[in-house]
Length: 449
Image (cartoon, rainbow, N blue to C red; front, side, top):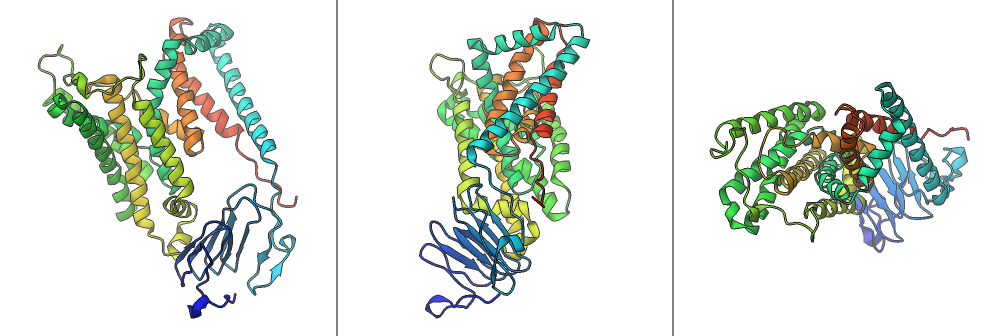
């Protein structure tokens, strides 16, 4: 595929325009606005109209009129649903041909129809999960309608709404710890361990300087984030050096983290003035997260929502987020494009661990105030479900975290009012997850249509 002549006498494979960056072979070109950007062999072109040579990734991000064209071996993708479907695809000889002779593109549904369809699938999935759950409740000898009604009413009580927000704060942060590495194709199952290590590091700093007030709280947040990042970094290093899958290492490191905490609270950090139970002494009031107004909700929920917004903005609108998507979508193409794949994977994992570590600090300084057995109450695993519930999208993961937090809070009613076992709430969570993932999945469209 012959490249257009280079402006200003540059390399024949370097093409750019007003806002685009002209690039040479094997480099990346990113343009914003109404720009035409092209990259040569092994390059990455991202902008409004992209032309890519062999081995190139061309990603279109315009609202309309996007053209993504490539020669043999190129990957051409229009990332917005509103991009036109009648774009021409340039062949290996540089000849523009009609798309119907090369590839059949799926028709783009209007946004409103797509939203309604998605909402309908979600409603049907949750309804199906509730029907199955009701059958199980009936088998246990309880009235499913009364049990669900009591559960919903207990969720809507003012005190319960505050508890939902409190429980959602660490869940949101831990869900972001899954979402961000997932963009790079990594499965971070170690949120639970990273939360524990984050809480341990924060407790170590807090117990030493908690009398310093706000300074101690800031130091705890930094220590927790660093601890979580380093714990996740162990799994990332093993993935990059010896090829061990991070899903395995992060999961196993959860148990190591728990043993580290148990050793500390049974031995060196055990409160000598406590009741004899394995726990550290409580943090000073000045080192705890402040509350919002007259509510019982601490500022951890604000930290969590801001973190989720930042993750969304980074993944959606930065070159770093774009590169993570390239690595997660096609690592081999990313290597051909000379992207620093190993470094991107490492950074993604470290950032995920830092977010989980922050979740541990928020839970420690906002709810528990001391290390003890059962500190996390499976926050990491529930957050993993929230991230999968949202298919690793940041903002929907926030909704998933609130949904699961509401189920956890409402689950108390299943025990107290309906006499059901404590594990019933976990059954309901599992059914909702399976129903949503199974029944809301987009079906592959007929290639002939």
